[in-house]
Length: 636
Image (cartoon, rainbow, N blue to C red):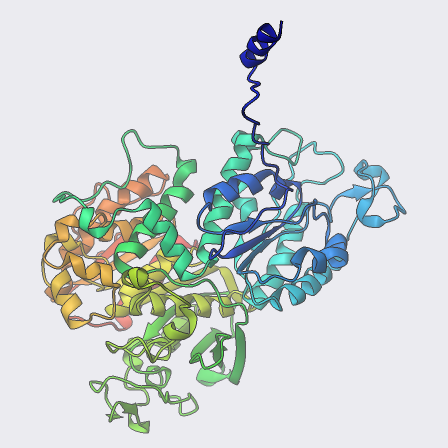
């Protein structure tokens, strides 16, 4: 009888020698893997739904914790946040409140955060939006004291028919929270827009919750946002697990394909784009840290009657947080005559903000500047250098077209020298293993990081339209603009002017400046891994069309000059043409069927191209093209 019982039990999976492993639950506590960064997820049932998947996606990269409860509305957060934070340090905190704040509950519920969900007509909102914004501010005050890298997560969509909630309220609450985050420079994971774009496939009908498969999709986006905020060492550690070592890459003379065959669903683009960015960081530009926790903006000077009253001028110093980190200065001009917030151009300059204008009030940089600049003595700017680059920055003409314009000297972030010890990098890199150093950020990525921090300032200004910020640049700063646009989706339009090798020009063409030549002349621009492709361009798993494609579906303009063979105009055009495959797949007009245009003819598509006569340089004619492109792409 005993033998028969054992046989029967074994048939249903029961043995006497083994015990089954309990299935993990999202609210169960976890034990830290030593040496990995610690991540805290704060959120409601939506985050509970994606917690296990996020843990799996970041397995071996980060310890992902969450409070052992539904974090509910902001009023519960105010009561319990201290216990959720505990006494251990956090590297990243990804947080959300809102779905419970905006729901309707029975009037007079006590305690209010446990109020019963009821029909809208019979109830009252748990936390009105004005109080919600105040609560979010108080919660953020506490979270910023942790020193963790923070990411705010927007509330996901409320479908029609969802009980106790009004569709559209989540938009109001999200905007209230986003205004607080923009003011504090906290990155935003716009999970609302991400989920809304694929709601029919991932979200339940008349229900705020998601199918299990939908929670998996959300987890992928959450994990991507967390990864971007992790310390550099953790980002590299994950990349090492998924990408081939440079010595194992196969030779491939053809350009790497951007889309598989058959092409996947366009809903997969966020993950595909993130994978492209991982490759670009790993093999070429390096990984950068997340946004600083204690970013601070100091207005040095403001003149509301600049340019004979046409503009308001501000000089703003950006402090990155960690002590001794060099600050950077933003010079901003905003048109006074406008209707609503102004669209803006943002770009780096070569020799100091004071060189972009003859205005005697603009601060002369005290940082190292290259000796080739006019009015420079012993690599320091003198008053004679004021306004020497003004022709490259026709500020008044830009203001007259209704655009704001902001610029930063790239030497504030990292002097253009083969020395990474005198910029922001040593203060923000953290501990990186010896084997990881070839994949950490170099100058181009550091300069792009500074552009993102300038965007942190611009997006919180009431006189700037946060949805219409263009990043632009010329030459090495054009390379930087492309890198910034690829890695920061807040730049809704990207322009490179004669960016050449390592920018818009295809490396495999080996025309003009080559990978070997640029690495030899400017070894500090790219990471160590990129040096292994000297005279080995065919081993690159990417090419510059990859960089351009990573900007999709946002508008991209590539500009060249016929007399600038060093930057390879044809290679720049071909890269934009190749990147057009992704734009076409995403339903955007592009250059797929275009031929190299004649001089001064703007191909004004979502992927645009322009070539002018003349040499390497930038001036009013180029800016006119930039603004014509922006006018059409932004519908002005």
